[in-house]
Length: 140
Image (cartoon, rainbow, N blue to C red):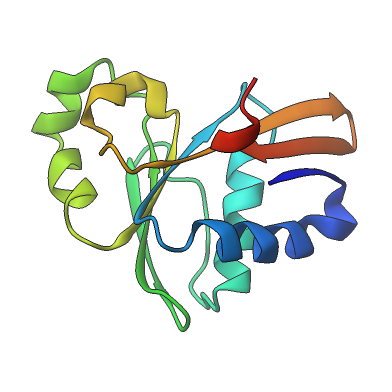
């Protein structure tokens, strides 16, 4: 998948991304700070029927949501994690092997914990209102 979009199209892109990646339980979102990882995951959760308040788990590390479409969703933000050892101590490994969908921001902080079949999603900031999203097959 490779899509260029603005906020008006984010729901459509989330729907298309779900169709492509739903067979994967762990999704790693790669992007620079301020690119919109949390905003995109919010749109994805909305598409999946989450009615809970969707917010960044920066301080909690993991937020859990209930989805009508996909069951339990775990939204993780590893920005504050120093390394894999700290992630293990925080219980991240258990979440990744739980068979629940895990959407991970800042996956490079503990990349060695990601399963082999992780679905890698890349976001790029093109300008103040436009983003590019692409997946493994289109990775540069």
